[in-house]
Image: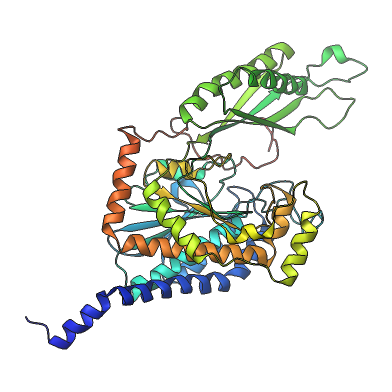
Length: 483
């Protein structure tokens, strides 16, 4: 059947670059509108500040928004109650957009430029900006879904609700469950104090808790009858400090006391420490962890205490993709419109008084190319990147110079400074997703680069065989046999 000439002319017009560009611009603008509309949800998640694997309200809030937007939502994936997948469309390409929403302990803070602990709550704060991470990503996914619904894009957009990024390794369990296997690419972003893009990587990480069990006794009246669990932990930490000198360059070792007794005149019966070991390469981390474990075993042996190990799993380094990075960097550079109004400037200047180094505000107008660099931190996005070509970027949601995992980052997160960075991120994600869904050659090039970098290596998560997600890793220290 021959098409009428008028219909052919319409088809030609729709395929023209000018029309395609207008459609893309509309999708980008729509992502910004949806993000602005969802700002109250970001603030609500900021206020809830839920711990990893316990983000029940945050996950449900995002999943509910996705359902109202017409997405098919599957909750509780990979054996994780607060993980979910929201999908819209059919067929390929499948574009994954990742979102997070867990907070950090001991960083509760009001949206003020001075240290003011937020009253009430659980003591947690969004010091890594995950409250805007999840909302921006979902808003971009909704904008792309609307384009699919209107017939202007073909394929599937899939939002992944990912909990417990901060030490819980949720995406590693999600990747092991095969949730990303049919994706063409995965997109992510992260809040920061500057705008960055490029094919950067990160540090691989293994996390563990070492629990020591001793014998309680009166610390003055009968100390010889006691065996201090805290001594076992402290000796482990000292051994870890000595270990640092004899590790490969780039190694990072971290630890903190999560439980160590409640009275100075009682020999502690129980103590617990939280330990990280990191390196740019997962294979090096795998070799370092047994050495860290020996520190704990030595601490228990020397203090005649018993050691219990809670292996929390780990995350691998990001496998960068230059093909995708060029697209994301170009979009972020073109769309970056960040600047402060008078109120935001006053807030920023006051906050910077708490910094040792003050970074100029004109950095907001720039996008730093971080290609070939490491973020210095770790993320379970790395596990996704070994399964599917992955790209990310960061936008300035915090005052320039703000350190991550700080009260200052929490404070910024409750202001319009974070809203502007979140909106920019959503628009950039939508632009990048649109580019990839309309350019099969670009997807093929990203896939080819991914295969070349893998060089035949299979994705191997830093998880024990049959290990389940550590859903209680943010719980208060708990001894064996206690509820």
